Image 1 (cartoon, one colour):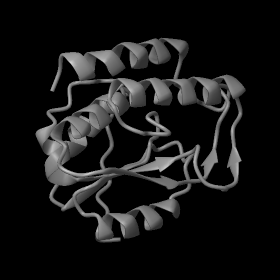
Image 2 (cartoon, rainbow, N blue to C red):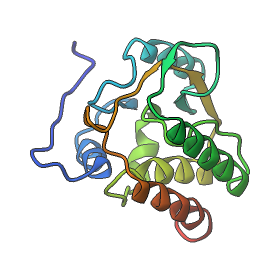
Image 3 (spheres, rainbow, N blue to C red):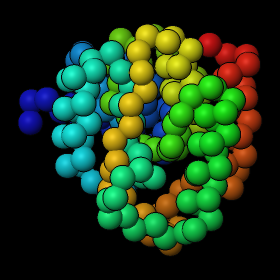
Image 4 (spheres, helix red, strand yellow):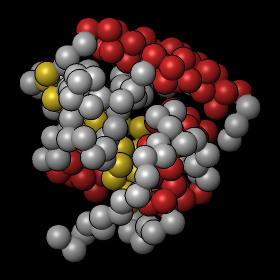
Length: 178
């Protein structure tokens, strides 16, 4: 597919590092962030692209918590944690985001490039949405997506430490960093 450029980091250095590498190679109007673990269903990107075409300046997020779509969550604690963090983020950032920890983001490339991403790990999720909201260029829109979660034995990598980082970064990016 000519619309897709595949980039790979040789060493596991974190999600934010991978996104920063991608930013150096972008030459499209929009960029999709998609984790390699395939917990998300790639066909859902079609609906995100359709919404993006109608709202070209918007950040489009895939949400695991809206709509009546089949999902396979392995851990109730991660559902609870993600919903809690999303509600806290929405309160602190005066927004209404149902899934701040989503992997699926479709964003105008120029906005992603201008963010100057600094996070190395999973907190890049908070950084991107926070910085986008600070620009007030357009809306953040959410699309229901499917989700097939993995267990830690199957390779899931997010940890309790990452959850605490999300908590800290929710306030950090609202109060101190632009």
